[in-house]
Length: 501
Ligand code: BES
Ligand code: ZN
Ligand code: ZN
Image (cartoon, rainbow, N blue to C red):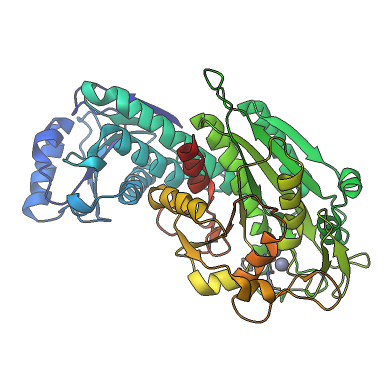
């Protein structure tokens, strides 16, 4: 889809449909008038009949006669002007443009709302509306014999000439973020028989080439040399070779200032059967989404390059399958991670923390310069879905300043996070009589014992962990998202990195 900011004076819409986003109580009459005579009349009728009041989520369609410049006008409500947020703008744009697509429109004009206050700045409006549109229009149809025939080819964002510059900047950001999210969703939705560790590495290479990133992948023999027994232990029951995928983004900074380095790590478990501690069959197919942390990290790298953030970012995605097999690791086995820590396996289904352990140890001990912060994202625990459902991702961190930065970035990003504690109570639950640590805590607070496990591999680097198990995919269409992977994490990470430089 092409996206253009058009600065002809407002009210010169083009295309098959116009989506007009309006707050409650906003007078549409003035600026809507020139959408066409029929529209004006139609709007008056709607207004008289109280058919459209600008309530949040309200969508009203007006189909015009053939003599008009545009086929249909779609009014989308935002709710009260004083409580408009990035998220309500995203929702409105997504609902409006999706309605236009359903009507068969290929070229759509989007008219931002008018009002006073910080949310009505042209850059913020364009950013949120474009991001919402891009995310809202995505659908996964790679494996359908017949792809949908409808589709929006061109989005015009209509602004006044005075707003054009800011709106273009905002639209560009919205597009970068939206497309990075959809990239992560596409990876997440790919089935396990396509999205293998090798496939993820190929996709990472593709991003590296497109965005000018440095690409490196550690193969199993190199992992063996480095002593990554934890990641290799998980992978040994699978015929798919494990990979440790790495991408580096170097900012181009003016002057001599050296940028700081930060690392992001994503769980790339391309299918989680549970291994020998096998999962029940019901909904096991959803475990193709167990690489969504890795997908979010790769999506975030696309966003980081598109936004040209000012920090050096190293992305690491440990990728493996978790399969039952004669060669699989077993409960009772003891694995040795790269940092020398021995791990007693008490459940082979707690594998995410094992593949992350070696990636975290690598990031904190081998990267030069040493990262100033490290954030990992993982569909790590079912317990997180119990605790927070699909309303928030869990944030666990041993560094308050880093947690605060992430919460601040989360606020407007669309990726909601809720902080949960880490303390000695949870750390103590990982004691093992046979090894340095067990991969399983006591029953209860599974998200926090999992986090406490990861912490043991982060050295002294400020670290935060995002458990995205409840957020990474959706079973039903919700808000912006169609069924399947959501790309959760891409935006909060991109915004956080933007905030650091
Ligand atoms: N990938 C799962 C976690 C998961 C479950 C994510 C459901 C999303 C939805 C993870 O590898 C796992 O199986 N965790 C176990 C840990 C347990 C054995 C300590 C779990 O949550 O049951
Ligand atoms: Zn598992
Ligand atoms: Zn898993």
